[in-house]
Image 1 (spheres, helix red, strand yellow):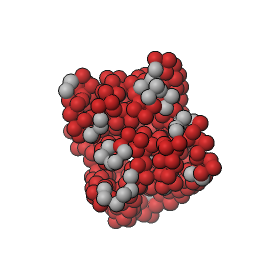
Image 2 (cartoon, one colour; image 1 turned 90 degrees about the horizontal axis):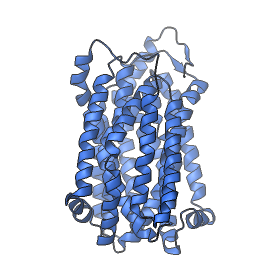
Image 3 (cartoon, one colour; image 1 turned 90 degrees about the vertical axis):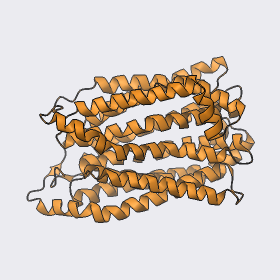
Image 4 (tube, helix red, strand yellow; image 1 turned 45 degrees about the horizontal axis):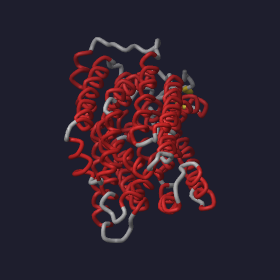
Length: 445
Protein backbone atom coordinates (compact mmCIF):
# COMPACT_ATOMS: atom_id res chain seq x y z
CA UNK A 1 0.00 0.00 0.00
CA UNK A 2 1.18 3.51 -0.75
CA UNK A 3 1.47 6.36 1.71
CA UNK A 4 1.96 4.15 4.75
CA UNK A 5 2.86 6.93 7.10
CA UNK A 6 0.44 9.61 5.97
CA UNK A 7 -2.07 10.31 8.74
CA UNK A 8 -5.49 11.57 7.74
CA UNK A 9 -6.77 14.49 9.80
CA UNK A 10 -10.43 15.28 10.42
CA UNK A 11 -10.17 18.28 8.10
CA UNK A 12 -8.53 16.26 5.33
CA UNK A 13 -11.16 13.55 5.61
CA UNK A 14 -14.00 16.10 5.55
CA UNK A 15 -12.66 17.88 2.45
CA UNK A 16 -12.21 14.59 0.63
CA UNK A 17 -15.44 12.94 1.76
CA UNK A 18 -18.01 15.76 1.88
CA UNK A 19 -18.34 16.05 -1.93
CA UNK A 20 -18.61 12.25 -2.17
CA UNK A 21 -21.34 12.17 0.49
CA UNK A 22 -23.16 14.95 -1.36
CA UNK A 23 -22.80 12.90 -4.54
CA UNK A 24 -24.47 9.92 -2.91
CA UNK A 25 -27.30 12.04 -1.54
CA UNK A 26 -27.92 13.61 -4.94
CA UNK A 27 -27.63 10.23 -6.63
CA UNK A 28 -30.08 8.45 -4.37
CA UNK A 29 -32.44 11.42 -4.47
CA UNK A 30 -33.22 9.91 -7.86
CA UNK A 31 -35.36 7.19 -6.29
CA UNK A 32 -37.66 9.33 -4.09
CA UNK A 33 -38.00 11.93 -6.87
CA UNK A 34 -39.06 9.32 -9.39
CA UNK A 35 -41.28 7.55 -6.86
CA UNK A 36 -43.01 10.86 -6.07
CA UNK A 37 -43.52 11.54 -9.78
CA UNK A 38 -44.76 8.05 -10.66
CA UNK A 39 -47.14 8.05 -7.68
CA UNK A 40 -48.96 10.88 -9.47
CA UNK A 41 -49.53 8.83 -12.62
CA UNK A 42 -53.00 7.87 -13.78
CA UNK A 43 -52.45 4.34 -12.37
CA UNK A 44 -49.78 4.83 -9.68
CA UNK A 45 -49.59 1.25 -8.36
CA UNK A 46 -48.95 -0.22 -11.82
CA UNK A 47 -46.53 2.60 -12.74
CA UNK A 48 -44.50 2.17 -9.53
CA UNK A 49 -44.46 -1.61 -9.81
CA UNK A 50 -43.53 -1.54 -13.52
CA UNK A 51 -40.68 0.92 -13.03
CA UNK A 52 -39.40 -0.96 -9.97
CA UNK A 53 -39.20 -4.22 -11.92
CA UNK A 54 -37.67 -2.64 -15.06
CA UNK A 55 -35.08 -0.75 -13.04
CA UNK A 56 -34.16 -3.92 -11.13
CA UNK A 57 -33.51 -5.73 -14.43
CA UNK A 58 -31.57 -2.76 -15.81
CA UNK A 59 -29.61 -2.68 -12.56
CA UNK A 60 -28.41 -6.23 -13.14
CA UNK A 61 -27.10 -5.12 -16.55
CA UNK A 62 -25.34 -1.93 -15.53
CA UNK A 63 -24.25 -3.03 -12.05
CA UNK A 64 -20.94 -4.58 -13.21
CA UNK A 65 -19.92 -1.20 -14.64
CA UNK A 66 -19.98 0.50 -11.23
CA UNK A 67 -16.78 -1.29 -10.28
CA UNK A 68 -14.86 0.60 -12.93
CA UNK A 69 -14.84 3.54 -10.54
CA UNK A 70 -12.99 1.47 -7.95
CA UNK A 71 -10.79 -0.20 -10.54
CA UNK A 72 -9.73 3.09 -12.14
CA UNK A 73 -8.97 4.69 -8.77
CA UNK A 74 -7.07 1.67 -7.42
CA UNK A 75 -5.05 1.19 -10.62
CA UNK A 76 -4.09 4.85 -10.91
CA UNK A 77 -3.10 5.00 -7.23
CA UNK A 78 -0.92 1.95 -7.93
CA UNK A 79 0.69 3.94 -10.80
CA UNK A 80 -0.83 1.91 -13.62
CA UNK A 81 -2.31 3.26 -16.87
CA UNK A 82 -5.84 4.56 -17.34
CA UNK A 83 -6.47 3.69 -21.01
CA UNK A 84 -6.79 -0.12 -20.52
CA UNK A 85 -9.36 0.48 -17.78
CA UNK A 86 -11.31 2.91 -19.97
CA UNK A 87 -11.34 0.56 -22.97
CA UNK A 88 -12.45 -2.38 -20.85
CA UNK A 89 -15.23 -0.30 -19.28
CA UNK A 90 -16.53 1.02 -22.61
CA UNK A 91 -16.55 -2.41 -24.24
CA UNK A 92 -18.33 -4.07 -21.32
CA UNK A 93 -20.87 -1.24 -21.17
CA UNK A 94 -21.64 -1.59 -24.87
CA UNK A 95 -22.25 -5.33 -24.53
CA UNK A 96 -24.59 -4.81 -21.58
CA UNK A 97 -26.54 -2.10 -23.41
CA UNK A 98 -27.06 -4.45 -26.36
CA UNK A 99 -28.49 -7.02 -23.92
CA UNK A 100 -30.82 -4.33 -22.57
CA UNK A 101 -32.00 -3.46 -26.08
CA UNK A 102 -32.83 -7.12 -26.71
CA UNK A 103 -34.98 -7.19 -23.55
CA UNK A 104 -36.69 -3.94 -24.60
CA UNK A 105 -37.49 -4.80 -28.21
CA UNK A 106 -37.69 -8.60 -28.52
CA UNK A 107 -39.54 -11.49 -26.91
CA UNK A 108 -36.72 -11.66 -24.37
CA UNK A 109 -38.63 -9.01 -22.44
CA UNK A 110 -41.60 -11.32 -21.93
CA UNK A 111 -39.30 -14.09 -20.76
CA UNK A 112 -37.44 -11.87 -18.28
CA UNK A 113 -40.38 -9.96 -16.81
CA UNK A 114 -43.21 -12.52 -17.01
CA UNK A 115 -41.35 -15.82 -16.58
CA UNK A 116 -38.31 -14.96 -14.47
CA UNK A 117 -39.71 -12.14 -12.32
CA UNK A 118 -43.30 -13.35 -12.55
CA UNK A 119 -45.26 -10.08 -12.96
CA UNK A 120 -48.78 -9.85 -14.36
CA UNK A 121 -49.78 -8.49 -17.80
CA UNK A 122 -50.28 -4.85 -16.73
CA UNK A 123 -46.95 -4.57 -14.92
CA UNK A 124 -45.28 -6.44 -17.79
CA UNK A 125 -46.45 -3.83 -20.30
CA UNK A 126 -45.20 -0.97 -18.14
CA UNK A 127 -41.85 -2.66 -17.51
CA UNK A 128 -41.21 -3.24 -21.24
CA UNK A 129 -42.03 0.40 -22.07
CA UNK A 130 -39.64 1.54 -19.34
CA UNK A 131 -36.90 -0.75 -20.64
CA UNK A 132 -37.14 0.92 -24.06
CA UNK A 133 -35.74 4.05 -22.38
CA UNK A 134 -33.35 2.34 -19.98
CA UNK A 135 -31.29 0.18 -22.35
CA UNK A 136 -28.53 2.84 -22.97
CA UNK A 137 -27.89 3.10 -19.21
CA UNK A 138 -25.10 0.43 -18.98
CA UNK A 139 -22.85 2.18 -21.52
CA UNK A 140 -23.48 5.60 -19.94
CA UNK A 141 -22.64 4.09 -16.55
CA UNK A 142 -19.35 2.74 -17.92
CA UNK A 143 -18.33 6.20 -19.14
CA UNK A 144 -19.32 7.84 -15.86
CA UNK A 145 -17.69 5.24 -13.59
CA UNK A 146 -14.32 5.17 -15.36
CA UNK A 147 -13.93 8.94 -15.23
CA UNK A 148 -15.23 9.20 -11.67
CA UNK A 149 -12.49 6.75 -10.65
CA UNK A 150 -9.95 8.95 -12.41
CA UNK A 151 -11.21 11.96 -10.44
CA UNK A 152 -11.11 10.07 -7.12
CA UNK A 153 -7.49 9.05 -7.76
CA UNK A 154 -6.68 12.70 -8.40
CA UNK A 155 -8.50 13.70 -5.17
CA UNK A 156 -10.84 15.88 -7.28
CA UNK A 157 -14.17 14.96 -5.71
CA UNK A 158 -15.97 18.29 -6.25
CA UNK A 159 -16.58 17.75 -10.02
CA UNK A 160 -18.17 14.39 -9.17
CA UNK A 161 -20.69 16.11 -6.89
CA UNK A 162 -21.34 18.84 -9.46
CA UNK A 163 -22.03 16.28 -12.18
CA UNK A 164 -24.44 14.35 -9.98
CA UNK A 165 -26.20 17.58 -9.03
CA UNK A 166 -26.74 18.35 -12.71
CA UNK A 167 -28.06 14.84 -13.27
CA UNK A 168 -30.54 15.08 -10.38
CA UNK A 169 -31.80 18.48 -11.52
CA UNK A 170 -32.42 17.28 -15.07
CA UNK A 171 -34.12 14.13 -13.80
CA UNK A 172 -36.50 16.06 -11.53
CA UNK A 173 -37.53 18.52 -14.24
CA UNK A 174 -38.05 15.85 -16.89
CA UNK A 175 -39.97 13.42 -14.66
CA UNK A 176 -42.55 15.95 -13.50
CA UNK A 177 -42.81 17.63 -16.90
CA UNK A 178 -43.69 14.31 -18.57
CA UNK A 179 -46.55 13.69 -16.13
CA UNK A 180 -48.70 15.78 -18.49
CA UNK A 181 -48.75 12.70 -20.74
CA UNK A 182 -50.53 10.69 -18.04
CA UNK A 183 -47.39 9.24 -16.53
CA UNK A 184 -46.36 5.63 -16.38
CA UNK A 185 -43.15 3.69 -15.78
CA UNK A 186 -41.61 5.02 -19.01
CA UNK A 187 -41.61 8.56 -17.55
CA UNK A 188 -39.23 7.52 -14.78
CA UNK A 189 -37.04 5.66 -17.25
CA UNK A 190 -36.79 8.59 -19.67
CA UNK A 191 -35.91 10.99 -16.85
CA UNK A 192 -33.30 8.62 -15.42
CA UNK A 193 -31.53 8.16 -18.77
CA UNK A 194 -31.60 11.87 -19.58
CA UNK A 195 -30.03 12.77 -16.25
CA UNK A 196 -27.33 10.13 -16.66
CA UNK A 197 -26.33 11.55 -20.05
CA UNK A 198 -25.65 14.91 -18.39
CA UNK A 199 -23.64 13.35 -15.55
CA UNK A 200 -21.49 11.24 -17.87
CA UNK A 201 -20.60 14.21 -20.04
CA UNK A 202 -19.59 16.41 -17.08
CA UNK A 203 -17.24 13.86 -15.47
CA UNK A 204 -15.77 12.98 -18.86
CA UNK A 205 -14.88 16.64 -19.50
CA UNK A 206 -13.44 17.21 -15.98
CA UNK A 207 -9.63 17.20 -15.90
CA UNK A 208 -7.00 15.81 -13.54
CA UNK A 209 -3.90 17.78 -14.60
CA UNK A 210 -1.65 16.57 -11.77
CA UNK A 211 -2.38 12.88 -12.35
CA UNK A 212 -0.26 10.88 -14.78
CA UNK A 213 -2.70 8.71 -16.72
CA UNK A 214 -0.40 6.70 -18.97
CA UNK A 215 2.60 4.57 -18.01
CA UNK A 216 5.09 2.45 -19.90
CA UNK A 217 3.54 -0.76 -18.51
CA UNK A 218 0.33 -0.27 -20.50
CA UNK A 219 0.41 -3.80 -21.97
CA UNK A 220 0.73 -5.39 -18.53
CA UNK A 221 -2.24 -3.31 -17.40
CA UNK A 222 -4.30 -4.63 -20.29
CA UNK A 223 -3.72 -8.21 -19.13
CA UNK A 224 -4.56 -7.50 -15.50
CA UNK A 225 -7.64 -5.24 -15.68
CA UNK A 226 -10.14 -8.02 -16.39
CA UNK A 227 -8.69 -10.34 -13.75
CA UNK A 228 -8.66 -7.59 -11.12
CA UNK A 229 -12.18 -6.43 -12.07
CA UNK A 230 -13.97 -9.78 -12.35
CA UNK A 231 -14.66 -10.39 -8.61
CA UNK A 232 -15.73 -6.76 -8.19
CA UNK A 233 -18.09 -7.05 -11.15
CA UNK A 234 -19.59 -10.17 -9.62
CA UNK A 235 -19.98 -8.31 -6.34
CA UNK A 236 -21.86 -5.38 -7.86
CA UNK A 237 -23.87 -7.63 -10.16
CA UNK A 238 -25.13 -9.53 -7.13
CA UNK A 239 -25.74 -6.26 -5.28
CA UNK A 240 -27.99 -4.95 -8.02
CA UNK A 241 -29.48 -8.38 -8.47
CA UNK A 242 -30.73 -8.23 -4.87
CA UNK A 243 -33.80 -6.02 -5.63
CA UNK A 244 -34.62 -8.28 -8.57
CA UNK A 245 -34.51 -11.37 -6.33
CA UNK A 246 -36.62 -9.67 -3.67
CA UNK A 247 -39.09 -8.43 -6.31
CA UNK A 248 -39.37 -12.00 -7.59
CA UNK A 249 -40.16 -13.17 -4.04
CA UNK A 250 -42.76 -10.41 -3.51
CA UNK A 251 -44.33 -11.07 -6.93
CA UNK A 252 -45.22 -14.55 -5.69
CA UNK A 253 -46.94 -13.43 -2.48
CA UNK A 254 -50.71 -13.29 -1.97
CA UNK A 255 -51.09 -9.58 -2.93
CA UNK A 256 -48.05 -8.82 -5.12
CA UNK A 257 -48.72 -5.42 -6.73
CA UNK A 258 -49.15 -3.40 -3.48
CA UNK A 259 -46.19 -5.29 -1.98
CA UNK A 260 -43.95 -4.34 -4.91
CA UNK A 261 -45.08 -0.72 -4.85
CA UNK A 262 -44.62 -0.33 -1.07
CA UNK A 263 -41.21 -2.02 -1.15
CA UNK A 264 -40.10 0.37 -3.92
CA UNK A 265 -41.10 3.41 -1.84
CA UNK A 266 -39.35 2.15 1.32
CA UNK A 267 -36.20 1.38 -0.66
CA UNK A 268 -36.25 4.87 -2.17
CA UNK A 269 -36.56 6.54 1.25
CA UNK A 270 -34.14 4.31 3.13
CA UNK A 271 -31.34 4.33 0.55
CA UNK A 272 -31.63 8.10 0.16
CA UNK A 273 -30.98 8.53 3.89
CA UNK A 274 -28.24 5.86 3.86
CA UNK A 275 -26.54 7.46 0.83
CA UNK A 276 -23.79 9.42 2.66
CA UNK A 277 -22.10 6.18 3.78
CA UNK A 278 -22.00 4.74 0.26
CA UNK A 279 -18.72 6.43 -0.59
CA UNK A 280 -16.79 4.96 2.35
CA UNK A 281 -15.36 2.51 -0.13
CA UNK A 282 -13.50 5.35 -1.82
CA UNK A 283 -12.35 6.71 1.53
CA UNK A 284 -10.76 3.39 2.48
CA UNK A 285 -9.21 3.01 -0.98
CA UNK A 286 -7.75 6.51 -1.19
CA UNK A 287 -7.00 7.41 2.44
CA UNK A 288 -6.21 4.24 4.45
CA UNK A 289 -2.52 3.40 4.32
CA UNK A 290 -1.81 1.99 7.80
CA UNK A 291 -3.51 0.83 10.98
CA UNK A 292 -3.74 4.37 12.36
CA UNK A 293 -5.45 5.82 9.29
CA UNK A 294 -7.72 2.77 9.34
CA UNK A 295 -8.75 3.55 12.90
CA UNK A 296 -9.39 7.20 12.13
CA UNK A 297 -11.29 6.78 8.87
CA UNK A 298 -13.34 3.90 10.26
CA UNK A 299 -14.32 6.02 13.27
CA UNK A 300 -15.41 8.97 11.14
CA UNK A 301 -17.32 6.64 8.86
CA UNK A 302 -19.11 5.09 11.85
CA UNK A 303 -20.16 8.57 12.98
CA UNK A 304 -21.73 9.25 9.58
CA UNK A 305 -23.49 5.87 9.56
CA UNK A 306 -24.95 6.18 13.05
CA UNK A 307 -26.18 9.70 12.26
CA UNK A 308 -28.03 8.47 9.19
CA UNK A 309 -29.45 5.55 11.18
CA UNK A 310 -30.81 8.01 13.75
CA UNK A 311 -32.51 10.01 11.00
CA UNK A 312 -34.24 6.90 9.67
CA UNK A 313 -35.39 5.92 13.15
CA UNK A 314 -36.96 9.35 13.59
CA UNK A 315 -38.68 9.06 10.21
CA UNK A 316 -40.00 5.65 11.28
CA UNK A 317 -42.11 7.17 14.07
CA UNK A 318 -45.77 6.79 12.97
CA UNK A 319 -46.61 10.44 13.57
CA UNK A 320 -43.85 11.44 11.13
CA UNK A 321 -43.77 8.64 8.57
CA UNK A 322 -47.51 8.64 7.78
CA UNK A 323 -47.71 12.31 6.68
CA UNK A 324 -44.48 11.86 4.68
CA UNK A 325 -45.76 8.78 2.88
CA UNK A 326 -49.15 10.39 2.20
CA UNK A 327 -47.97 13.83 1.10
CA UNK A 328 -44.58 13.23 -0.51
CA UNK A 329 -45.34 9.92 -2.21
CA UNK A 330 -49.12 10.36 -2.53
CA UNK A 331 -49.77 6.84 -1.19
CA UNK A 332 -53.22 5.60 -0.23
CA UNK A 333 -53.97 4.20 3.22
CA UNK A 334 -53.15 0.61 2.26
CA UNK A 335 -49.71 1.47 0.84
CA UNK A 336 -48.98 3.77 3.80
CA UNK A 337 -49.59 0.85 6.16
CA UNK A 338 -47.46 -1.56 4.12
CA UNK A 339 -44.54 0.86 3.73
CA UNK A 340 -44.75 2.18 7.29
CA UNK A 341 -44.42 -1.27 8.82
CA UNK A 342 -41.15 -1.90 6.93
CA UNK A 343 -39.50 1.48 7.51
CA UNK A 344 -38.21 0.77 11.08
CA UNK A 345 -36.47 -2.38 9.81
CA UNK A 346 -34.84 -0.38 7.01
CA UNK A 347 -33.24 1.86 9.67
CA UNK A 348 -30.48 -0.78 9.86
CA UNK A 349 -29.42 -0.03 6.26
CA UNK A 350 -26.94 2.82 6.97
CA UNK A 351 -24.84 0.92 9.51
CA UNK A 352 -24.79 -2.36 7.59
CA UNK A 353 -24.08 -0.58 4.31
CA UNK A 354 -21.25 1.42 5.89
CA UNK A 355 -19.56 -1.76 7.13
CA UNK A 356 -19.88 -3.35 3.70
CA UNK A 357 -18.52 -0.36 1.79
CA UNK A 358 -15.62 0.45 4.08
CA UNK A 359 -14.27 -3.10 4.34
CA UNK A 360 -14.73 -3.78 0.65
CA UNK A 361 -12.56 -0.73 0.00
CA UNK A 362 -9.83 -2.17 2.23
CA UNK A 363 -9.79 -5.39 0.23
CA UNK A 364 -9.74 -3.51 -3.09
CA UNK A 365 -6.87 -1.31 -1.86
CA UNK A 366 -4.87 -4.39 -0.89
CA UNK A 367 -5.60 -6.12 -4.21
CA UNK A 368 -7.71 -8.91 -2.65
CA UNK A 369 -10.79 -8.48 -4.81
CA UNK A 370 -11.67 -12.19 -4.55
CA UNK A 371 -12.78 -11.70 -0.94
CA UNK A 372 -15.20 -9.00 -2.08
CA UNK A 373 -16.78 -11.37 -4.59
CA UNK A 374 -16.99 -14.18 -2.03
CA UNK A 375 -18.79 -11.90 0.42
CA UNK A 376 -21.38 -11.01 -2.21
CA UNK A 377 -22.02 -14.68 -3.03
CA UNK A 378 -22.46 -15.42 0.66
CA UNK A 379 -24.95 -12.54 1.05
CA UNK A 380 -27.11 -13.67 -1.87
CA UNK A 381 -27.00 -17.31 -0.76
CA UNK A 382 -28.16 -16.33 2.72
CA UNK A 383 -30.91 -14.11 1.34
CA UNK A 384 -32.28 -16.84 -0.94
CA UNK A 385 -32.18 -19.39 1.87
CA UNK A 386 -34.05 -16.98 4.17
CA UNK A 387 -36.68 -16.37 1.46
CA UNK A 388 -37.33 -20.11 1.19
CA UNK A 389 -37.69 -20.38 4.95
CA UNK A 390 -40.00 -17.34 5.19
CA UNK A 391 -42.38 -18.25 2.36
CA UNK A 392 -44.73 -20.20 4.63
CA UNK A 393 -44.50 -18.02 7.75
CA UNK A 394 -47.14 -15.46 6.78
CA UNK A 395 -44.69 -12.52 6.58
CA UNK A 396 -45.47 -10.61 3.38
CA UNK A 397 -45.31 -7.18 1.77
CA UNK A 398 -42.53 -4.65 2.20
CA UNK A 399 -41.64 -6.11 5.62
CA UNK A 400 -40.59 -9.33 3.93
CA UNK A 401 -38.53 -7.51 1.29
CA UNK A 402 -36.70 -5.23 3.73
CA UNK A 403 -36.14 -8.06 6.21
CA UNK A 404 -34.46 -10.17 3.54
CA UNK A 405 -32.21 -7.27 2.54
CA UNK A 406 -31.13 -6.65 6.16
CA UNK A 407 -30.41 -10.35 6.73
CA UNK A 408 -28.18 -10.54 3.65
CA UNK A 409 -26.25 -7.39 4.57
CA UNK A 410 -25.63 -8.71 8.08
CA UNK A 411 -24.10 -11.92 6.78
CA UNK A 412 -21.87 -10.11 4.28
CA UNK A 413 -20.67 -7.53 6.81
CA UNK A 414 -19.71 -10.17 9.37
CA UNK A 415 -17.76 -12.09 6.72
CA UNK A 416 -15.80 -9.02 5.56
CA UNK A 417 -14.94 -7.86 9.08
CA UNK A 418 -13.71 -11.31 10.07
CA UNK A 419 -11.54 -11.77 7.01
CA UNK A 420 -10.10 -8.26 7.25
CA UNK A 421 -8.61 -9.18 10.63
CA UNK A 422 -6.70 -12.02 8.99
CA UNK A 423 -5.98 -10.70 5.49
CA UNK A 424 -5.67 -6.90 5.69
CA UNK A 425 -4.91 -5.79 9.24
CA UNK A 426 -1.44 -7.43 9.44
CA UNK A 427 -0.41 -5.46 6.35
CA UNK A 428 -1.83 -2.22 7.75
CA UNK A 429 -0.02 -2.72 11.07
CA UNK A 430 3.21 -3.48 9.23
CA UNK A 431 2.84 -0.31 7.16
CA UNK A 432 2.35 1.73 10.32
CA UNK A 433 5.37 0.17 11.98
CA UNK A 434 7.52 0.92 8.94
CA UNK A 435 6.63 4.62 8.92
CA UNK A 436 9.52 6.70 10.24
CA UNK A 437 8.33 10.28 9.93
CA UNK A 438 4.52 10.33 9.61
CA UNK A 439 3.10 13.61 8.37
CA UNK A 440 -0.50 14.82 8.47
CA UNK A 441 -2.31 14.28 5.17
CA UNK A 442 -4.12 17.48 4.26
CA UNK A 443 -3.79 17.64 0.48
CA UNK A 444 -7.30 17.29 -0.91
CA UNK A 445 -8.30 19.30 -3.95
